[in-house]
Structures are given as C-alpha cells and as structure tokens.
Image (cartoon, rainbow, N blue to C red; front, top):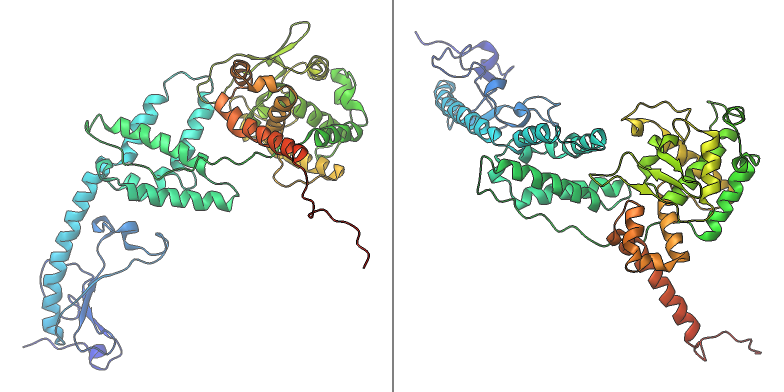
Length: 463
C-alpha cells in the first residue's frame, strides 16, 4: 500500500516535505533533505543543510560574515510529483555532498601551504634573533599580520596555497588598506610598503617548500611626498613663550627634584603647572635631539651624559635594526636647557613621569595622548591653528628649522652626519625638507627679481 502524503501538505498549510520523515524514502542522503514549493512554479525544488564539518563554504554558509543564519544548498527536481521529486533530490544531494567533501579535502591541502603557515614558521624563527628593540619590533609585525586589515585576515592568506596567490589578491588588499587609511586622513602608502615587505619575507620563507616560487607583482605605491606640517620660527617662539607663562616661569628655573614635585599638579586636570613644565622639557628634547614621536614615553635621564660642554643622548631603543649611537645637540643653547631638565628629573622617565608604564611597553601608556592634548591647549592659547599639528610635528619642526638656519647641513658631506645624528636618512632629509626649502627659496628669489606687470597693479582712478 502506497504511503499517503501528510495532511499539512495536502491542505497547503506547509509547502515543504521532509524526504525521510514525510516521504519515507530510503538512502544515504542528508537528514535535512526536503522538497518544497517555489513561488508559483509547478516543479518542486530540493534543499538541505550540510553538517558544519562537511561545509566548505565561507563561515560554513552563514551570512553576514558568519554572524547570520546558514544558507541551504539548493537545486531543482524537474518534476511536480512529490515522490519523483524526492527521488531526484536524493540523487542530487548525494552527488552534491560528495562534491562538498572533495572541496573540503582540496581546501585542507590548500591551507597546508597557505601563507598563514609560513607566517607561523617565520615569526617563530625571527623571534629568536637579537634586536635592540625586540618587543616593539615583534608587536609591529604582529599588527601587520593580525591588526585591522591585517594580512592574516585575508582569505588568500589563509585559505589559498601560496603558489596560487595572484596580483589581483594584492590589488584588492591594497585597495582595502587605502580606503581604511584615507578614512583616517592618511594616504596609506607607508602602510602598504610595510605590508609589502612582510609579504616578501613570507614568500622567501615559503621557498623552503616551493623552491621556484615567485612572488606576484604588487600594485604600484605612490612615491609622491607631501610637505610635512611644521611650525615656523615665529610660531615656535610664540609657543615656547606661552609655555613659560603657563608654567608661571617654572619651566626656565633650575628646580631641584623636590621643588619640581612641589609644583601645582592634579591627576584630574592635565592643564597644571608641573605638566606645562614637562611639555616644555619634552618639546626641547625633541628640538635639540630630533627624537622620534615614539621615543617620548621611554626617554630616561640615564640615557643622557654630561660631557662638560655638551649633553649626549644615547637612545637605547632605535627604529628597526638601526645602530645605537650618541646623538649630539647642534644648538648652542642645548647644554643649559638639558642640564635644567636633568636636574629636576635626575632619575627615571623624563616626559610625564607620573604616567605609569612598564619597561618594554612604554608606548602602551597614554604619554602620547597627554602630549597631544596639551599641545592643542597651548596652540589654542597662542591663537594658532591646531590643524594637522601633533607631537610628530615637533620632530619635523626641529629638522626643518635647523636646515633653514644652517643650510650646510643639507649639503654633502655634512648631510650624512646630520642624518645619522638624527636617526634618519639623507633621502628622508631631501624628500621631506630640503626640496621644499629649495622651492621656497627659488619662489622668493623670483618674486624679488621679477618686475610687476605695468597694468596688473591697482591704481587710484578718478571717474
């Protein structure tokens, strides 16, 4: 006796039939397999939801980047007869399930040789190599891999064999990086260069398995460099004068450690006398030694040595793998200024020493945030614009104004010594400062030499 169809199907209250429960058809097919009515079409469709372990789709078929519901795998039966549709669904689902399992096997092989595996071996190996700033270096590399828009978040880095990565993968990735950086107000070119370097390192690591492996070309990274924001001489003098006023004159007094600690100060309001003194010290350390913005949280008085006529700064942590060396202040007023700073803070951190931080993780403190807050406040007090001005601006100001005052430092052979002393390169000095200084000089000389047009000047005319 033929099995009858369930009442919910016959009366139309439900428009789907379970192939196993409602139709009772036998076979080695997915337990979730069903046939159902699609709109106003006569032929029935089939669908099933594979086990998550057997689902090779991204996020196992879940929508909304893995946060939504899983989608069915579907197809058509070519018939409107429920029994025939059930049989067709069984055949189609079995074939589809075999295809899914083959896809999982292929994906497993792909992941064995994915860039993510070579990242693991590479980072484990380089972690043992000696570096002066190993903690920061490791953190920077891990951010490139797993940070926002990190390489390790891209499907081509985790789900595709390294031998099948293409130029188009890099193109889409760089487009993503550009969009993110532009939303933050930067071009993203420096980030793309760092990503490019890390990817090349990982491809070199992969050549252990694939000796003939070639890294695909990268999209071109623009080399156009904008003029960096810096303060003029007048703006610098105005800012320093205002800081001295805000500190009640204490910034220029030879204070003892106890007198320094007794200055007006509150943890609840950053705009206090002792913090203005600290900001004065911070910008002058930058002014005299061309320090990088990330140096501020870790600068210690122990890194400075008084030689009687000059105070040397020995940075115990440098960018990348650069050589450690003493930095000399070129300005004649450096000696008295730095001696004053070291006298009031003879031990420990020099910039906002009240802010807690641990050795090796100083940049995780809020020293930079406090500097930027106070810089904005003193600029506003001076009536100066705060647009694009932050703690990094003071390194650019120190380089730019030094080169303006003493042009010889931008010429061979002195430019090499100046670059090394400031922990930078000749190329950076030329691209960021010298070419803009030269352009300003040329335009100024042209304005002074070229005569104005006879009919372009405004004359008083009597009508």
